[in-house]
Length: 538
Image (tube, rainbow, N blue to C red; front, side, top):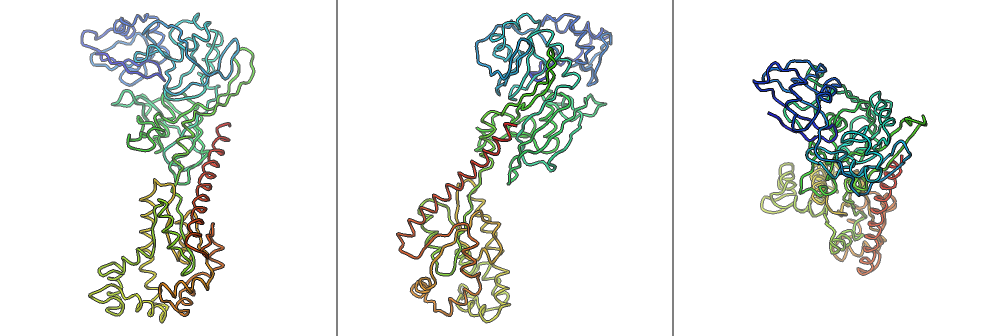
C-alpha cells in the first residue's frame, strides 16, 4: 500500500506499508521495486537512505541492507520524476544575480519545485526560462539549495553552477547560512524574545502535518529564536522576527503554534480564519515571509546580506487587525448641551449611548436601581407602585453624603458595564459616541479613546436648565459641586466643542468634530504603517 504526500517544503514524501510477500527483502531493494513507476535508480535510493531521508517505523534508518518485515511503516523523502522540466515564461523578482547564483523574492502561492500535485508552474520552471544555464544540472530541482513552503514568500537563493550549488548546500548543512523570517502571529507572545528548542517530526496521525515529537519517536532537533518587533495594543497580533538555526519542515509554523501563537492564516497549525471573518480575504495564506539572509559567497568569499520587505498582504492584515472603534465620550457641565451634540452625531449615522438613558431604565419600576433603593430605603425613594422618585432621591443625596455615595457605588458599576457592552457591540464601526457626564469623576478615562468636552458659559447653561428642566440656581450649584470644575473638566478633554450659539451652529461644530475624528483615525493608521514600513525595511 503506497500513499503520496505533497510536501513542497520538504520534497516528496512517500509512505508505504510492507506487504507479506516483501518480508525479508533488503530495504533498498524493496524501495527500488515499490517505486518502479517513478524510474528511481537503486543508487539514488541508497543515497536517500544513507542521507537519512528514510524512516522505518518512525525511526531514521541509514543502512540500505536493513531487512523489511510485514506491516513495517516506511516513509521516503526523495525526488522522483513527474514530468519533463520545460522552461516557462513567467515573471520572477531578482534581488541579486551574478554568474554563480541568483537571489530571488518568491511570491506567495508559488511552489518552488515540481511535485506530484504540481508538476508544472513552479519557480524552477520560471527560473529555467530566465537562466537557461540551469538546464545543465541534473534532477528536477536544478540549483535549489533550500526551499520555501508554497505559501511562504520571500528570499530564496538559487545556484547557477554545480560548484555554487555544492558549496551553498554545504553552507546550509553546516548552518552557516543565517535566515530570518517575519511572521504575523495570533496574539502576542508572553516574552519579547525567547528561544524554542522543541524536536519536530511527522504528526503521528496526520501525515501532511509536522508536530512536536520526542527524539525517541523520530523527532529531530529544531531550534528557533524569536523577537517581537511590534505588538498590537489589543493583542490581536504581533509582528515577530524568527531566526531558525535548523531547517525542519514547517519549523516556524510548528514552533509558534506550540507556544500558543500560530501564524495568521495557517489553517494547518491553528491559525485559520473562518470564511465569515472580515479578515479572511486578508489572511488567505500563512503570514510567513523569508525576510533576511546572510551567507558567504561560494566563489568570491564575499559576505552577502539581503533584506526583502514582505508583500502588501502583511501590511493590509496588520492594519485591519489594528483598527479599533474610536470610542468617543462626550462630557461637560450640567446644561452644556451634551445630549444635543449626541443627537446630532446620531443623525450623522454614529452609534450613540447615554448614561442618563441607562440610569432612567435602572430607576424604572422593577429596575435594578429601583430594587436596590427599595431594599435599602424602603418607600422613601422607590414607591411600590411606581418608578424611583428622582426629586426625593436628589434631596436625599443633597442632605447626606453617605446616601449619595451608596447610590453611586450601586449605580455606577452597572452603568459602566453597559457602556463597555455598547463599545463591544459596535466594535466593527469606525466610531461610536457615548454621553457620560461623570466620566472624569468616576475615573473611567480608560474606557474612552477621546474625551470631547461640550463647552458653554454658565449663564447660558443656567438659562437653558431653568427653561427646560425648571432648575434653579441652587440646584445647579449643587450638581456642579459634585463634579470637577468647568476649567479642569475642559482641560482634561482632547477636543472641546463650543455650544454657546444656535442649534445650527452646534450642527456645524458637530461636522467639524467628525472631520477631526476622521483625521485622527487616519493619522493613527498612517503612523502604524510608517512604523511597520520602517521595520520591514530592516
